[in-house]
Length: 114
Image (cartoon, rainbow, N blue to C red; front, top):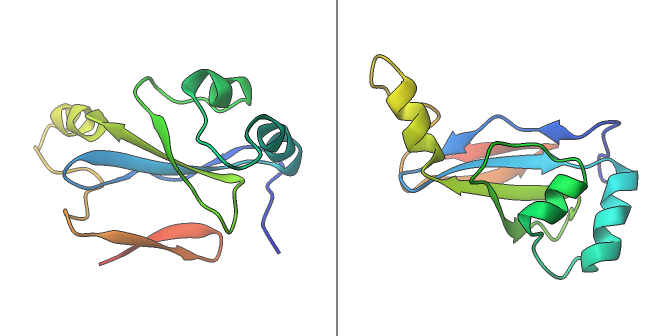
């Protein structure tokens, strides 16, 4: 049975060498609104996910539909991780697991599968 939170939930950010990623879990009522717009068959444009109440900095794109749980929106941002890395004073790679890291569902979260 899918997990529907009371409010929109945002994952921690994670990255590879090209993108920063995060997932957003929608409450049931908002997920129904999304399904009315897309029938679960297409990605949301930025104005559509913002109108649903999802708030993120500029540059994020809904890039994949998670078919088992379409109320979980998968986002990525090209260059966001570079901006974060530049802001880190020690020069470390924030949230990066490497270029060949895949993610798998664990309960109701996504975890790196290294």
